[in-house]
Length: 225
Image (cartoon, rainbow, N blue to C red):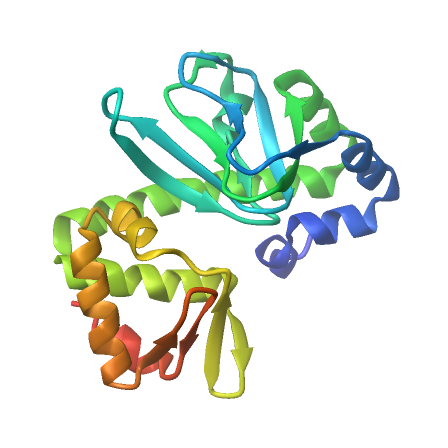
């Protein structure tokens, strides 16, 4: 398989090129209402999930009242991928932030699909590799970056993953709240608001509740220390 293929492969491309696999995903869909949980801590980790529509947040509970968000995922993303490594007990939760459609496969079913569809197997290997890289980069940012650099680095990575180019600018739709960014960068909502407002004043970004426009991505990257 060409090296570029693994680099560019995604869930939609795999489904489009494998009609029978696409049928498996369509027949296994589950509708999740906003605010409903897909799983909770202490439950058995025995399934991996693919987001076909909507937005899902992952997190843990520090105590009975404190929720710590560890990831916010969108259409095409995968979660609970560690289920493929074996059955364990979950220590996190997954909840729909808006009406969503997901499909879940047990560990055994997923391994069977990977054996039957080589492209899907490549996709799963890519996903696992990306998760390791993301964990490493997140740890590095916590150790070596100040709060401003962590927030800006988060914006840059979000653009690189989900952004759409519009001429010289980039747009991120369905953007995060300031509190979400704070949770995902281990900073405070006040710090996020202050830094985003400063970037807007400098005409590097523009934003509202629904989207963020990156006017100068190179300038934004240069602010990471």
